[in-house]
Length: 206
Image (cartoon, rainbow, N blue to C red):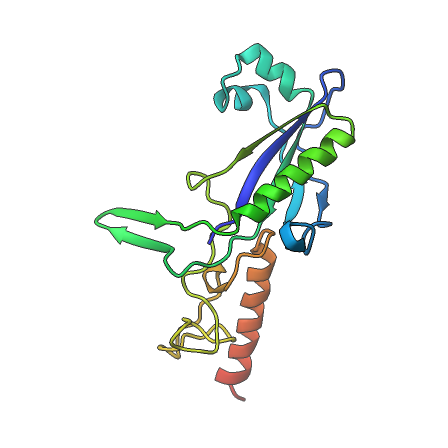
């Protein structure tokens, strides 16, 4: 799994944004509800401030116009959960790594982006643009060695120990059974600390 993600650019032609690297705001109001059939939609946060050269390199805008837009825009990052699909795969073919990502839950993400656009316009930004990230820009990959109690349907148990190899512990994002809708770094750190505590209590005696 990856996250379903989109960048949003809210522009007011007469209001400058002097921020250098804006990452101080996030909104979880729609994390658990608000989507189709009141389904969860995700997390919104500020995106590190876009610059004219970055915008020009990723859009058809000429340099001078890209700079004008970048200086008057607020850049946002919308992130939604990607649900697991048993057919998604990371494979090795010769000397290449192949990612076959079967993206899920896109309808909820599209509804989230549409909701954010409406709110940004209501907040006073007459122009709001969005661009979805695809498999060329994967975000926070997880899964492939999922955690679970059934050895036939998972790789590690709830203590992050391999079902097949007792001396193997896996504590990275591969054990996550779902992607949630936030950066998994703190969850991964917590799992590693929990697994280390489990090893200390079960493998070492005094």
